[in-house]
Image (cartoon, helix red, strand yellow):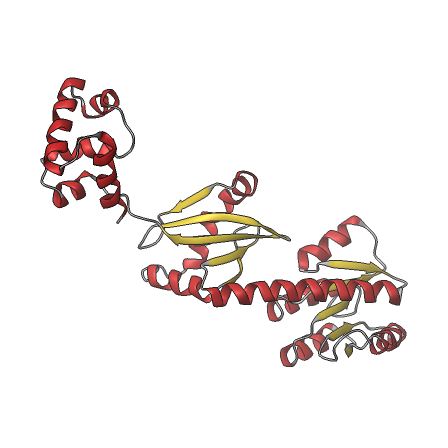
Length: 297
């Protein structure tokens, strides 16, 4: 036996023959099989026990496999669901993935193929869960969303952050989803960042990577861009000198500063001479270093 008894497989099929065959194969490999003859029974079981993987027949009376999958996905958001189906049309396969399935095997079932797929998907799911738990404990503000910007999972710190800055928004997750969905396509290709201004405080969203069918994102409070007023308040310089020093900290030349502030280059240089004297420095680099330190505090 290669697997722990804790690896539970929920098998949903209205065929006693299929259930019997899979039950033997799963027991032989050391899995714990749970069986359901229809979607209603499967949902009832899933509400009481969390399986490691679900094998789901696509064609069943009353509630078909696609509808059952949608209902199970609400209860088991992180559990792999593998369809078992005799349907081979592309449309049926697409419907299975859209319902929340991650794989499918065609009937008649090969027990060896099913076991290999189960092992692979359980292993992948456990790695993903381990990574998610590590992120939770690390305190990262990360989340996973689908192509429409809808939340799949997020760390506790992310929930706390959104709660703290969305007190006047009754549907913050809808707001976030709407802000993300148009950006995701570009971000997945170019790794761009997104500045969000839809809550009480600005946020910066950074694209990390594609994780299966989901997008892994990192979110942080955007730093408020400081102005020349900060320099004027902290240093013994005039308003105009603070403006010159501000643009100096961004690496602008005297000519560029003159164009921005609508001054002559000569006047800018005069202001720089006064700034050097007041700050006790003798060059642009030293003055800029003081400015940058204050603007980044």
